[in-house]
Image 1 (cartoon, rainbow, N blue to C red):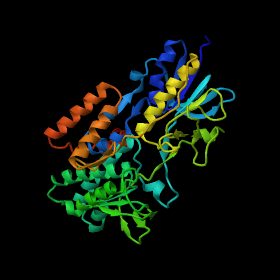
Image 2 (image 1 turned 180 degrees about the vertical axis):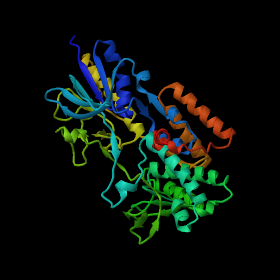
Image 3 (image 1 turned 90 degrees about the vertical axis):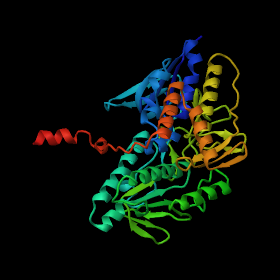
Image 4 (image 1 turned 30 degrees about the vertical axis):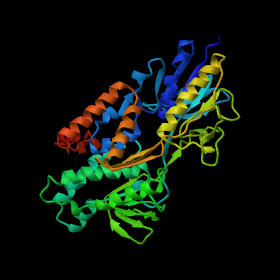
Length: 430
């Protein structure tokens, strides 16, 4: 048997589960290297609860060294792949670039926020795709309440209390729902502010929110948000966000100091930049077995791959439930090829979708059964808890939820996290 070097690029849902599934290949004498920009895997569906403080940020991430002990972990960003030469260029944390040789490529670099060329968006928008962004957004929302409480200028106060979310998919709806709950609880402890002083706006270019779910569930979710005073603006686009003023396609223009962008994702540009085959959307085309079309010893899965979906006849959506199962099937097929076994096509039928609208509220469809309100919220939590890798994280999250049920919400905000060296630098200048 010839020992083979396997390089896994990225450790999101597909990459992590692919690397975990390659343990059998390592036992057989092959070597696996995982290159990822962070030393941890982040469970993105829990980011809204990280932002609201319901879950400790550390409980929503899984240290890769703990779950991938059979792999060599290289913390760094893969910037280019030369598959003809079987080489990958990796930029590590120090800025140094290293060349990693491999025999088999597993490409799972994931996706990034799709930022449109809207004036002011890049300068003033806040993304919501990483745990760092979730922590920042929590601190930012709470700090805006502090600004409003001390502001004497009514215009400044109004801008501080205006929160605009662009994108009505899972990420935008869940982030808004959780943070609106957080802000409402925080304002209840401030005699100088009222919940009615806040303005929460959800903007989406489509004619409905939550397109991943049925139309009736999307309408229900929009109605529940409106019941809480949220402005749900459909068939509306963000035109600009310059000079602290948000301008919308429906003619509205108003000051807002918080602009959260959750309007979709796009595949990592790594494949395109490396000259690998990509489709018109930048995804790597793969066959039913998750092999990259036209290349030998190369496999791909996750958000950056165009994976055939046998259940729909189109391309599998970029969801967590698809990504982790693609990673498992990819690992099994790679191991089968290395050991002379039989590969099997990827096949998975979605069980549905779940969405939280804040504490005790949600919508869900599971195996055709539609759920609303508290029942949907319970199903949302249960599904994601079971999908979270490692029992250690599941127990920690369950404990966080129990504490949140029994005690008031933690409203501490650590604004100094934005510039942690500032207090020391100020002291040094005294």
